[in-house]
Length: 220
Image (cartoon, rainbow, N blue to C red; front, side, top):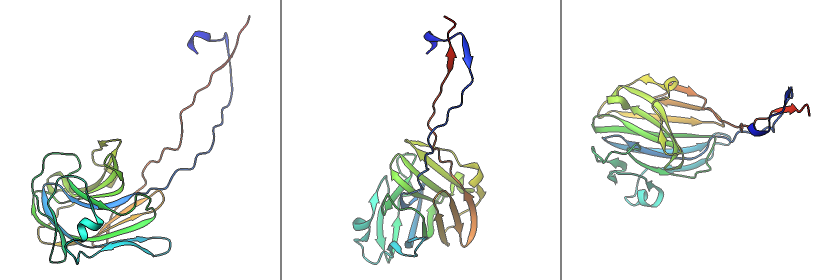
């Protein structure tokens, strides 16, 4: 419109459509960053009706291949009723060693599991709200050389740095079992370790489409 500008601008109001934000949704998962760990008692519960959406106690060695999807590097196996990731090293990728399970349409859920660090330099890297390899959230527990815990987000293939408002000091102890809980509501995420709240975060959900208008009159 720069080639057809009028002589006098006219003030106008433009009102767009109300677009309802979609609730947060996606699969859940387990993972590590250059660390060996084991996991147990995985459960996902619907917050509204208390129904168990999925659970895994890893009683059968074949459970992992039936229920889980390996996304990146990692040596995953079920041993003595626990799911283990036994690679301390992996080719560099922004996702670490992760596997996911569940339904990409899951929303409004509570995700709980037990996690134990076996050895390595960091801690747990927990994917959730997983849509695909290019879109998900992570809870990085024991990241940044095992000094911090914080959320990170992968959006359109780009992984963010720590979401500052979710960062706290935290060190994962080797051999200690932690009870981890993530509570996902429509537009909010809460994270707990051993019953203690670590963050309460409202992701920005953009429901607006950009639109511009200029109204002018021509003196001719």
